[in-house]
Image 1 (cartoon, rainbow, N blue to C red):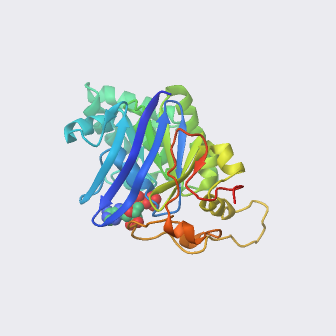
Image 2 (image 1 turned 60 degrees about the horizontal axis):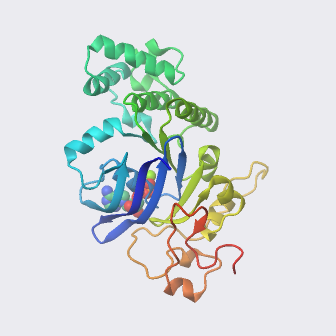
Image 3 (image 1 turned 90 degrees about the vertical axis):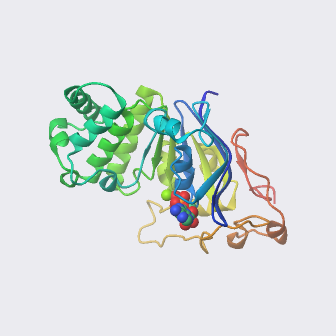
Length: 318
Ligand SMILES: Nc1ncnc2c1ncn2[C@@H]1O[C@H](COP(=O)(O)OP(=O)(O)O)[C@@H](O)[C@H]1O
Ligand SMILES: [Mg+2]
């Protein structure tokens, strides 16, 4: 497999807490890999680790290889180059990703000129073609507009155009369509797949919404309290979820036919500060936990082993 991204036992330490714990996952060229789990599970910190953008005071251990190069040990200057080239990240809120007091076009030109030598005029032409490429039909108007004059969906398309401008081999989409209307979100996911088919980059698709992941991902890693608790091909994870947490997430999805029904909620909440636990981190919320689950850590999930779950009793064995 031609892995663009290889994360091996990545942990993020913030003071005494370890919000990301020994995560392993891979993304190959042309592949969409989902990273799903409730808010606070460590998805964003994982994505930020890949780009060397962790908040001050935090520290990453393990290895993160991006296009074959170890991100965690390289110097900041090298990392900065990697960010504009090998990988780009698109976040949830395009309104805050753009500077409100500069036109979209001015922001494109600034970024483009930082990475491609050439005149402002050439950068402007490139910006227009990038905006057209993300299916914005009036690129001249978008180019001249201030961010507040555009809808969230348009801004998110522009954000993807900016991310694509450096021809990255990996795009990290962090809740990139989570805040948009359902139909707008779907059209942007379609756009992402079309661009991927054209350009061949890998995607790490980060979301708290399992339904979004189902829509676009080839494989899914389910995160709970900073650990991967289940990994497998999307179809397998949805049709035969092995971990009780994955089953709870699936049960909590709104059913299109459940008119006026109440949404199932998962009892309890994600631990706010993940300190080391001896057994399974989900044991205190798990409907099938036994004393062993509190005492003994389940086997870790490896990203190469097909479908696996970090559970003493994956479905069917208890
Ligand atoms: N800058 C920070 N300082 C301290 N704790 C943080 C910081 N950023 C994130 N955390 C903690 O790390 C955990 C994981 O955060 P995050 O990766 O943002 O989760 P997610 O993206 O899955 O919602 C959370 O419990 C959060 O409180
Ligand atoms: Mg997040």
